Image 1: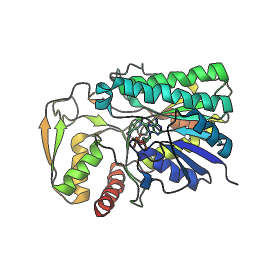
Image 2: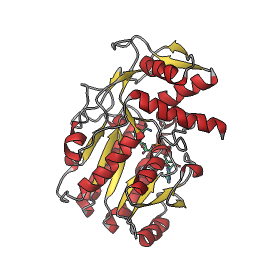
Image 3: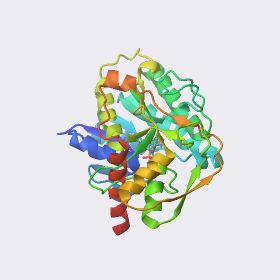
Image 4: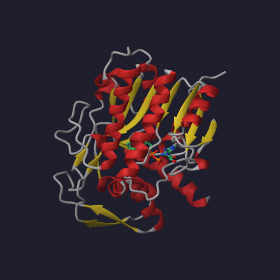
Length: 330
Ligand SMILES: NC(=O)c1ccc[n+]([C@@H]2O[C@H](COP(=O)([O-])OP(=O)(O)OC[C@H]3O[C@@H](n4cnc5c(N)ncnc54)[C@H](O)[C@@H]3O)[C@@H](O)[C@H]2O)c1
């Protein structure tokens, strides 16, 4: 029988791609999702369980039935603006509920891989940003992801939990089949917004064009979701080689390409790929948007042997566009 991986949030954008990647690598994906932001039809493989990560009895029964070789924890609330309005909801879901899952992993001695974010760094003090960059989140979402990272370290110290952390910069793209892709509500990510504006002829907003960048708009580091999933499988192999005494600093990896694309470049590339004109209107800067967020991903490259293969901007947008075209038909 194949070993299984428990994928929390497997009905969401990145988790649903991890389900495919885990199955392709020979694992049986077991998905735990409460469908608060996920979609049942995004689950294309494996065993789906509907429920919350904080349900101790459910966790016990899943772990007893499937004995997963690893837990990959994607389930979280991740809208920055919502986190500002409802910080308690974010703290409960992303920290307190996640800690219940971590405790179950620690007690059952199951390795744990956590989806973290560049939002733990806050405003860049230098760029490209490596893992040693100070962590000073500037919104409750980033605070909760950093607090969850710290909880993992507490469980390592108290229970010997074996864990690894991936700090994603901007996840983007979709599996090339066009069946699963990015579906957040509300959507706040630039690439799906640009594709929708192209497809529907609606206006989109550029927040600030007076930054100190090549064309005045913000730079972001986009990673194809398939490359993110590959990093998870590599990290799974890597953490088997770690000793419990190895601290957080040896368990954290940035995932980014090291190249930033500006908002205008993304919009222009999307217009080219979709063959449509995009009506982009410049608005004032938003508070808290750094001019450039670009990763130094050398640790993941050197230690995990990770090399992004799908993360050129055109491939990302083509794959995402295929998904959005299918979404319109269905
Ligand atoms: N999308 C990005 O660019 C990005 C960047 C950095 C980090 N991340 C992190 O990656 C992870 C996945 O993000 P995504 O974009 O796929 O989000 P998503 O909202 O599409 O997926 C999250 C999934 O988790 C589920 N979920 C949430 N809380 C739950 C709970 N308490 N119990 C069970 N299920 C629950 C949701 O129903 C959903 O299916 C998150 O942890 C996020 O913080 C995402």
